[in-house]
Structures are given as structure tokens and as C-alpha cells.
Image (cartoon, rainbow over all chains, first blue to last red; front, side, top):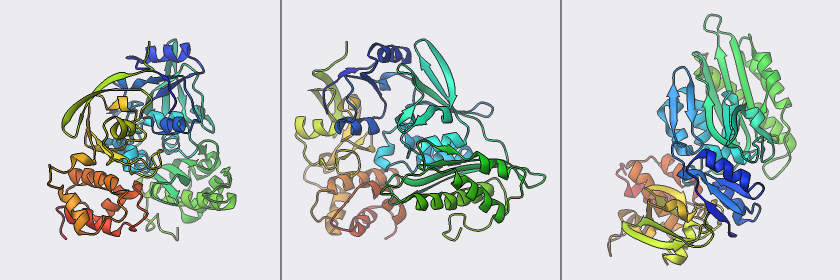
Length: 300
Length: 159
């Protein structure tokens, strides 16, 4: 790794000032899993490295019935995957975190690093977009909150200004009678995804119809894709196999995959359709809806 | 302000306190292998894919090739050299030998560290749990069967 100036600020405010002072040559480091690999390959060559791990309070997980879940940017994936509250109430988020890299990666890689790296194959962004999370960004001069949609603006690109830092991830508390699922198709256990699907549905208890749905596709475009058409189609519908099939076709139609070693354009689009179907079925079951057998089965 | 040259760091290595001068651009793996001359931990892909550099940080397995050495400050680092007690091998090491889990040996330090971390957390893992945990540690010789058997044999589970 080439040399850099190494600084450990004690506050986010100071970290932001440093990013501003060294604009264009400073990089923020959290867990370092993605950044160190990029630096070793000389794809990123920061003159100044700002390590935020000395700032206290950035690795907290808190849950309130009313305000929902708050994740600090330095929370590691293992904690998201194993936290009892997250597993119970934000199941799809725990499922996403549990499938990032390998165990030894999940012990140092952080939620903030995962989001800010903005890899189109990233797992947390589709999950958090599906859960309608807000990202709190702060700089020395102000703060704002953005949706995950706004945050992920292109391949490996976020909406962060040069001196802005992702300070907190806010996930609204899920409604009762809602359910979510995160499914990932990959070639091997630790590979990046061919396609990921995050889905959540709200079941109207009285009518047993779909109250609302949110479907997000990952790895089939420059950023996670919110399949709005499919979600609109599901609203107010009976959650029958035919309806789910139609929703899956609509969602897959919004995929913008590229051909690469993980599959052709047609294959990825087809897998997006199949995985949307499976994710919707699983989410519906978790929302208390009827069970049609194993949602993960190959015949789905 | 900010360091480019040497920085003084202290941490615990295999139960013993160590203090040394490092550069901020050194990975934990480089410090372990070059500065501390503990070459049991291997340097493989260098980008976190292969798992041969696995060490424990405060008991949890991490990729030492992707961790900055400065981040080990004040923490407990365990390498393969920390498993045996003097001339007495760790039960997991014995089990690897007994079960013929070692061929070329290059992946074994990483396999032992990830296996130890698993058994520390879950003394009775299922075969599936063992396979899930070693998924990020590549072995190009054995096909994993004997490695899985060795970890299960060293566990407290029924065999």
C-alpha cells in the first residue's frame, strides 16, 4: 500500500473539516474491507486517510417502538445479522447482512462502509431501500437526510458531498401484519450476487388483500432498483400465484443488468423474475398470509 | 498533523503484550509476518477472498490482510502461533492431524483460526454450521471433507 497521511479525528465535525481541508485527496476509512483492497490494487490512492473509528458512539444499534431502528455507521455486519431485535422486526435486513462476504469479513466490515462504497452488488442498500430507510448525512456546516434511492446515485457513486459523512441509518418501525424477505442468488457462498431481491408486503388483516408492497432489485443496474410498477400493481390485490407471477414479470422488466461472468442479460433478468416471486411469497407468509409451500423451492 | 512515518502501537499478541513502531499503511498481516516474524499466518490473495490470513481480533476471526495494523491498538490478537500451549498442540490441531485434514498445509492456519473461533462460540456446531463458517476459507487440496470432519471431531458434539 502506498503511503498516506493518517489522521484519527475525535468527532464527526472534525472529520468533516479534514475532508474539506484535504478535498480531493482525503478518504474516510471505517472497516476498511473495500477501501484497503482498492488501495492495495492502487485503484484508490488517498493522500490523507481519515479513520473515524476513534469517534465514540458510531457503533450503536438502538430500537424504539415509535422511532424504529437506528444504526451507527460503524456497526459491523455480524451484529446486524445476529441482533435479536433486527432478526425479529427487520428480518430482511438481518438476512442481507448475514450474506455479505464471509464470517471474517462480517467481523470488520461496517454498514456505513458498505453503503458509502456503493458497489452495485452491495447487500445493505437494496435491503435498506426496501425498508424505506433514511440516511443522515452531516458535515461541519450542516446536516440532511436522504433516502437510499437518492444516496446511491451511480456505480460506486453516492450523493455525498466531499465533506459529508454518513452519520446514521434510520429504519422506520415496520407495521404490524407486514413481512419482508431478502433473497440472493450467488454462484458460491462468498461470491457477489447475480441478483438480489428485497421485498416487503403489508397484509390487510380484514380483507386478506395486499395493502402495499415494496420490491427492490439489486446487482441488475448501477444502483438498487425500486420496482414501483410491480408494487403499484400488487396494491389491493388478492395475493394469488397468478398475481405474484404478474408482479414478478413487471419487476423483472425494470432490471437493467449487464452481462458479465455471473451471467448474461437474459439470465439475470429471468433470475430477477424468479427471485421476486420467491421473495414475495416468503414476505407474504411472514406477514401472516397463506403458505404455498417452500418459497425457496426451485419450482417456485 | 497526522502521521506518515512510524507510529507506536501496543496490543496483546497471543496473550503477551507487544509494543512496536509501525507505519499507518501497514496491514495487520504485514506487521505480524514481517515486524513480529510470525510467519504461520499466510499471505494469499491479499484482498480478503482466500482466508489464509485469518487471525482472531478480540476472539473474532478477521482478515488480517484487509485490517490496518493501527486498528489492533489495545486489542487482543491471536495468531496460529497462539493455539498450542508450549509443545502441547491445541485439540483442534490434533484433530486436523488425526483426521488427515492437512495436505499442502497452506490454508490450514486460517482453517484452524476460523474453526477455533466457531468452536469457542458454538461448542457443538452442526456440519452445516461448520461448512457455512469455513465458506470464506479456500482449500485447493482436500475438497474440505476432512477439514469439516476434523472440526466436528474436535467439537463437543455427538460423533
